[in-house]
Image 1 (cartoon, rainbow, N blue to C red):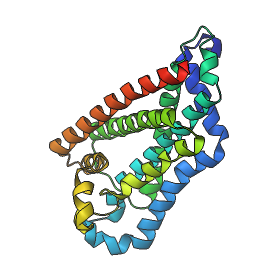
Image 2 (image 1 turned 90 degrees about the horizontal axis):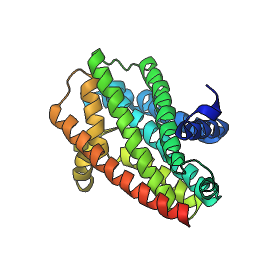
Image 3 (image 1 turned 60 degrees about the vertical axis):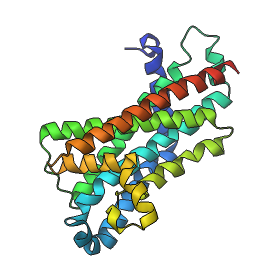
Length: 255
């Protein structure tokens, strides 16, 4: 099928993926940084932390690293959308017979596809380092669905951040949030080992809930309460981010 016959949203998604492939620095960083972090923790600290987490540290840390990869990759959407708006691309589309909002859809779809591919790379490295999941095919389906939902929600939040930002630098700051939140969770260490003033936040923030849900699915011990709470968080954040993104995009497109 030629590009000319594709829906506008798919054309914009293809455009976003093409731009991502050309931006090798960000593309490599989005995959290399989480893999390097996992290599560091598992090879340097893994043997010392096995007793702390009550089992294989590779099994413990992999779900958190996958979310770290997903969050950082999704955060790149903030700078991409800000660039499209600030350079007048969105405004030019309003003079053409296409939906300018298709740009947002294209960025979101491209982010989900791009980040799921990155997560697969991280997962293969984790398996090579000793990650041994026992999930059934149905539980793997749940893992994929939960990861896709996390990437989607984080991408929508990044889109709203990019639309609200006044400069490329401020849009890029969202990457720090994407990297910071997993560290203040149970991604690398049980919450009991964190200082008291951080423990409550780490135990109840949505990233922790998603990580624990993924761990349960990966070990064939899913917890229905954790799964429910993580999905409720993702749905709530997703709806809020969607509404905010739509409002900010409408304002940006008319400016």
